[in-house]
Length: 173
Image 1 (cartoon, rainbow, N blue to C red):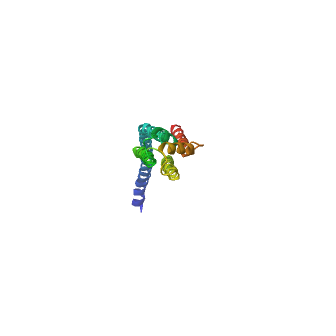
Image 2 (tube, helix red, strand yellow; image 1 turned 120 degrees about the horizontal axis):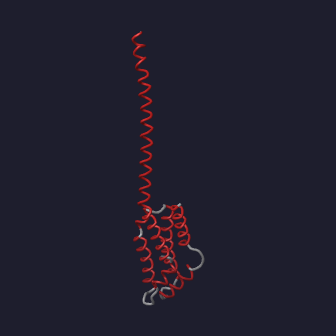
Image 3 (tube, rainbow, N blue to C red; image 1 turned 90 degrees about the horizontal axis):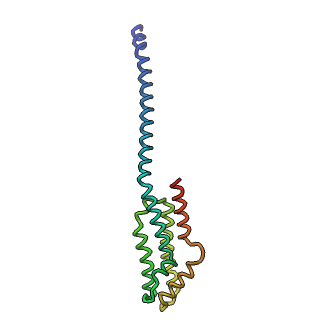
């Protein structure tokens, strides 16, 4: 019994020291790991911030360039038939959108959904107005009708632009 007490007298303090050392080292390692993770995230943000801002800029340009009234003014030509002009407008919107597809990696999901909605709405609007026109209507009459209908009030593109603006302001805070 005396031997067991003698062994405990030496081992028990050693175990307490070992556990204390383990807890201290573990806490220090956790602190260092957290600090390194924070530095890594800050470094990534520093590297990706310009890319994210560029994505928002490109999507802003997309939204501005693909408003139906602006497209109609920019692309109107009396040499197109109604169907040719309709196809040109739809293809222009789709091509611009596809050109900017990769930007979705850098913007919020909400912002990307708004941009997609604007693209879909522009195509829907072009097709709806084209369907309401007589088949022999000129492309200029079609463009005029598009401008009349879409030039009234705030449209989806304006709301999407406001959302992009809010995202950028939040990102820069």
